[in-house]
Image 1 (cartoon, rainbow, N blue to C red):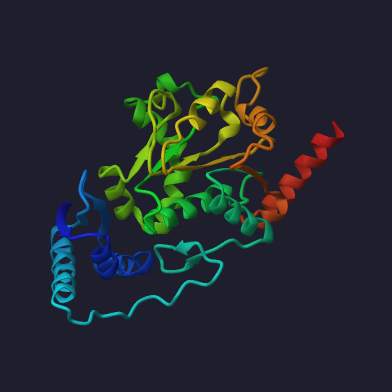
Image 2: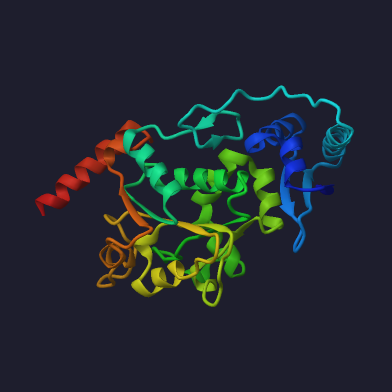
Length: 309
């Protein structure tokens, strides 16, 4: 694997080269089999692209990108063929070129809630798209330059297997807990681009234990599986918001892996932040489950059993 750095003058030139919502960037990734990441130089208005992949693929992709830059700077017309415009309710486009959009009325309201609030909570059972749609909204915010980086976090809760006995250092141990977030990004931007983003800190994985003392500016923060946080932990996460940042907190209050007798911070914070301006809660239900049809029946059966108890 190799990485090539290509400098751009400013955000306007980046838009010209990469297209609206990075449509040409994704097309180039698909055409050349590379990962391409756009970064802004620290303390400057200039930007650069990082092209990552096998040496031969990177060479071909870099040569094509430079030809687009030369044409743009010389005032020559650029090739504009690319994916068709996104449907009106689509959030972004997946790595395979297909639009990513809400599939139920409640999911659509959830996306609107995320886009209109700096702190949004998505609460519902497994398979309702609460994490997947949050990742899509984060990607859209990054592509449209609303934020400069993405922060991903999940509580690490030992369920059956003690963390101390897992191999590797701490970050390697928490990777399995963050896998659902990785899967969502892989389906939207591809593993190569996601890996390039991680290496350049466009995407940062921050376990809750490492959040203390930090402030995240110009970032889109996703706290996933928040039902497994204590009140102190969720307060710690919520108070990391900095200037120009927004946060989505997701969780399923019907299932928690916390020790018996430990209250879920997500349930408590629903009461504490109720009615606070700028904060919104959206609830999804089994109607919004998009997984195998049997999952919806399983959730209904469990709900019925819980109520009977």
